[in-house]
Amino acid sequence: MDPLSGWPLVLQRLVRMLVFMLFRFTFTTIQKIYWYINGTTHRIRRSKKSENYSMCAHILDIVLFNEFDIADHCSTKNYILSHKRFESPQYIFDNDHVSLITIDEENAIFGVAKQKGMHLWKFEHGSFIRDAQVLHCKQLILVPLNHFHRMAVELGDPKGQLIFLFHTSRCGSTLVSQMMQTTGKCISISEPESINAMARWYKCKGDSLEFRQLCQDVVRWTCRPYQNITPLAYMVKVMPLYNYILPVFGEIYPCSKCLFMYRDVIKVAQSFYRFSRALPSLVLLDTVTKLSPRFDEEYLDWVSSLGKKFIYKFSDDLSLGVIFVTVNCKLYSEFRLNGLKVSALRYEDIVKDKHLAAKAILKFCGLPMSLEQDFLHGLEFDSQQNSDFSQMLLAKHREPPLTLETERLVNEVLKENGLPIIGDDWLLEGTITYGNYQ
Image (cartoon, helix red, strand yellow):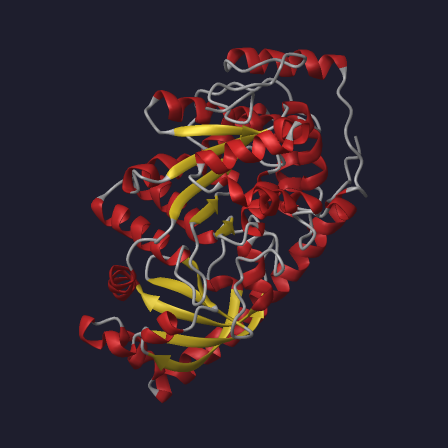
């Protein structure tokens, strides 16, 4: 165990964040005065009124962006922005290089890619859409939520099959998302911040008709239509911190399909440790969870609904990965018990027999078997090559070993949560890639 592993990156990001916050405070303070004098503040207030729908889209140039890491909640506070102009919402409809980034309590936030024709859900621009939006957007568009709802009504539901993919992390889910994309007939959107925002809204404010309406609005614009593309399906891969939101989307879209991807617990935990060295927030979390089990409980309550009833007994380099697997596998089992129509994919099955697995996945998603070869083409390159988590970069970090004592403690946790123990066949009920899927 290297107690300093990852900390140079943490300290670098903390310094950068403090400098950015100071600069942003100074910039926005001066900007507020200027906007008040030149009338921009008044126009922003007017744009929120229902009668001003025709010019409600506030376009701002991106001057600077900063975030602690990819796990940070993306918002306008991550940006320094300058006023450009007001536009009709039709501008967003007409330009499919504009994509929904996220929402806050007042606005839907769209990003404008640097070039027309850039579809930022494509893996050539980034392994995760929120990263691609940071790297390749030149402007933001703020639309008040009342107008955003009207836009979503005009847009309507996605025209293709809607598929939600959730996972344990470090299990091959990004690879499956890439495989769907290489069919040429599916749009796969990897971990959009808009879904994360709805999960946080749900956890903080609970359920309501307003919330459900906003969830539908977010799905419609996250899975927006594109010129010259008529997809058979939209796959939305959800960040594992926010899997608890899936039953809500399943109720709003009862015809949608839901898949859960997993992998052997130790393989995930070892990969997760190497992955965490590139995320300052996980380096910090790893440090504090080793200080007290209390932090484990609080963290689990933040991640899901299991925090107050989930007992974890040890903290070492494999802890966080085992937590992610255990929490999300248990969520999967609870979803099935509570009536959510969800099935599972196992990474080991894809490696063992890729053709059988491809047929099972395509059949479950209602896609033609003629797409199999294109689907399997997605296996031929690193799905995270355009991120900080590429195989080449993560290979620089060591893989923590599994000791006998850690194995004993992990098995106790797995038994208590009704999951297979180390050494058993790690197979969950409802796995469609195992055997001959009918």
